[in-house]
Length: 151
Image 1: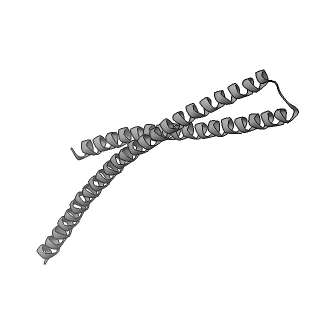
Image 2: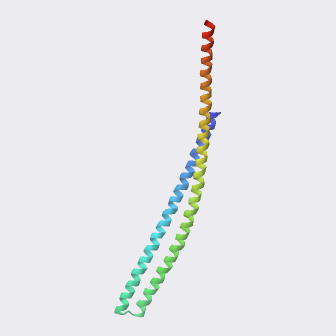
Image 3: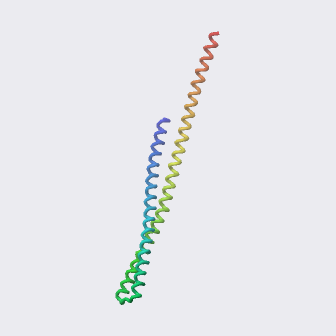
């Protein structure tokens, strides 16, 4: 029965560790998505700044209204893209927080099963030690009785 309990705990531990690994992978992926969105946001901002610089340089030379409208339309598209990336970034940040909480809960489950398994192993070791001590006591008693019966 004790061996069966140990096998059950080991099976449960492996199962919970697998779930913890999945939660860690989900968290890692969410963090990567968030970082990629940060990079996208910076790229869009940089491109917008470069495009505004071009508009400024062209306006010094002089530009017609069609070109000016084209520049502004494109800048508006960049602003829209920036807003979309910000939305995605906020969603990714929320997913990171949610994934982290899930991983922490799963980590606590693994630690609980590990602690239970360790306690079970300690209890079994204690029982084995008592049996061994009882066996040594029995041998010592038998040796004592043999010595005393010879006299």
